[in-house]
Length: 346
Length: 256
Image (cartoon, rainbow over all chains, first blue to last red; front, side, top):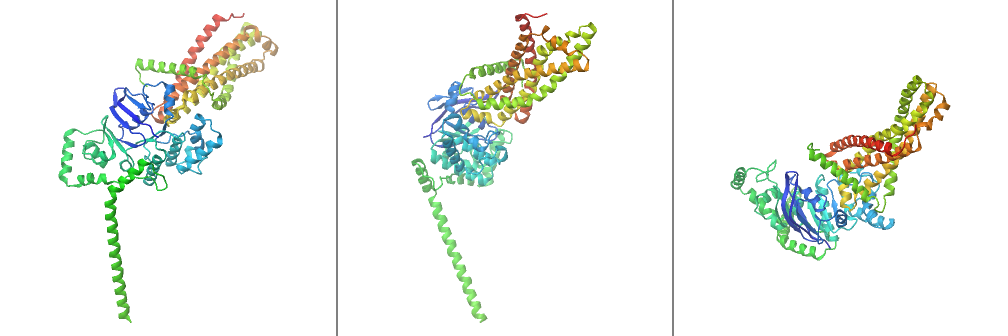
């Protein structure tokens, strides 16, 4: 069972530069949450603060009843055993083979015999599709493989909380799709609390239960997926639609007058913007693969998704049937004409 | 690195704090024997050859300087005594310091720095492993061991080099050179030199680890960290050398 993370009034700055302030949110136990934000808004810093690698200036982070911002170093190491973290580049140990990398936490923290270690490591490697690459060094494999190996290493201690730092950066779209499926399957299997930090909107729409958006040194919004996808907040809508028009600029933020003008233009331009917005909530959620046994939570989600998107599917089916009919008719017609030709030739 | 006076104080403070952390972590079990042996072997392998090659000319220069001086004074029989004294007391700790900081320290700093910027250190901390315990303590102990052994090597090679230049090149008498060995130098000189080497090893490894673990800003950050670590280590080692020599002269009665 996952663990709830409760963040309250968190503020972090480097020197005079405030990264974000007064961030309060609760990551519900066992659910998948995504933290979105333009580049440079301190998403990775947020992640590192959650595991206690960086100390916030103010605020508290409560995990399993302990405020980790106030823990002593030694107790912090104990709490961290609850975590599995996938770093941006996998953060594998360059001097060890993939097998040793993945076995590392087991060898350090448990007294399991080597045969048991081997069984667990191979199981996790199979899970991320890395069987056959055990003896490779991290320098010899592609970025995608490094990422999957990092994920396998994060999983070996059966963590209660798994944090992903940009799991989709530097991966091709197909691998991103596989990784998203893997994340959902994992959540159904091990029931841990997931937090994914990313700026990939497509994944953010497909995967999570909750979405948060960091912008302009604060948490703009955090809540259930439907709420953010249908939100009218300009920043949220701009980011989720990947538009240029809106409060987010190339450097950091635009001045208010320009934003208003752009949004007005967008409104008069036609319905393209609204069309996008109304299309967003219809994105169906990614469900666990058919082979994965679904816990009650996922069953409920699957049923709700089915209800939401069934009408659409029926329409599609009807359309397909109509198309098939038309095609058949055309075929018949061509056959008839051919027959007629044959007759006339004869 | 900020140039403000408080910045310098802060860095000294953090460095000292890390040294205390290392001492505090020292007795924690399990001891990382494998890492210790690997690191000792690695540091020895990068320092032994340069140390030997540096100490031969060091011994030779001392022999040349003293040789001509003693000949002018008619005290050739003392050239062995002076050569041993110089090599044992000053040359060997200084050469050891240079090599430990320049070859061993840089290797440690570059290694840890590269791990830091690749987020390996963060990953290790997140996996619940204290890098001070897992990485720094074995490196500090390994460097101390190698420094002590290097000091012995420098003494032997330096004295041998001095012998060669004094006896073979300057036609000194071997018997007089060997017989005067212990007229000025004494056994406590060797112990003092070994103690110095031990302390130098600890300082070099702690500074290198501190700089490596605090590297930031990509590959350039690692280069800067190595650069700073060498400069800081040299300064610290020469100051320490001076202080320890001064204290040694006060504590141990001198011969001659």
